[in-house]
Image (cartoon, rainbow, N blue to C red):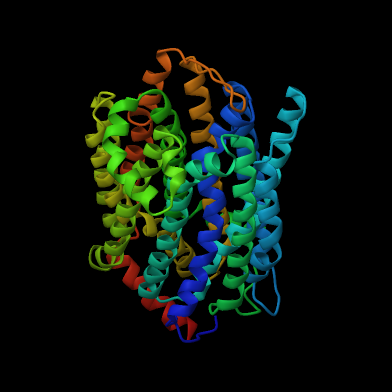
Length: 481
């Protein structure tokens, strides 16, 4: 391994973080609106939307990600292994995102085919871009303190993307589309595609790969896979990643149904009226279009602001107590505030917002640690086997992410459909059965709590604690001299 200076400039940290901001303009849109887009804008039945998201997601998870990981680890160019992937997928990823959220006028069967094809293309390009991007964090530096710092920069950027998508996107869609959600989402996605592509190009030009395997360090795909399946921390993190993203997709995709079908509109309007009045006075009139969409956005805003605050505590806590122990404690506490939603009646808007804020703060502490721990797993593999296979380790984690996203999103569509939800097309008005409100309540409380609690339990068996982190970093530094 080359042993270049491991301290990273602020410019490079910011440049790297812009890549995650760009990717999350896509990812957060998938988490928050994919099911809603299919059922309430594109007009697919909830059951059909569930089949598409699950089938395509599993194919992408188990097919695209391992393939891209193996290819990225074997890429050799003057730009490194991973940066070329970011360069050459920047623009195609934006185009695919726009196509996936477009609404061409096909027959119902044609819509099903179009949705499956464009979602597949989007997930393929997302894997081709985001997997090498994630692996890049493992080769920018071998300094674990710097790695924690990079993760904090990166996930502040993630929170900004999440803030825009979950707070402003739905009101803006209604505003720019003049009530036509199909036209509104196409307009918004066009701008997001352009902005995201530019930010990915900035990431390419501002980053550098420093941990470079020596030419004699060669390994076959069979050896890489053998290393993986003998790597217990990797198996645990793969499973934890899947459970975490099941919850994120489930609760993220359910809030829009929760506000539209469970939360009392008059109580919500009364609670948020001082806030919407402030935004309207500042010229942000799109918050006045619809109280439910405004309440949905402001609810997400409170959680995201507190997540950003939680992220600022993450590095200090991880440096002191280790990533694993900090992760377990913060994830467990944050889950309690998800579970609490089962007790709130429709008019208890204030306590709903308070629970979201507290959940956001504690979950924010854990947010940067997931990918930093996966980078540690790559170090553990190198430490144990004397071979480094960064991308395939990250690709396996992307399998967990895609599987979790697919299962979580499909569960939203499947469960809300089982509670009697009637799909809506365009501006069509439908009176939903009373059972839908109960389903929406379960989807933001009991159901998403279960995967988070399971993840906490699994992390107890993850053996890379603070003491082992220090030992691995020390030993690898000596080897790389």
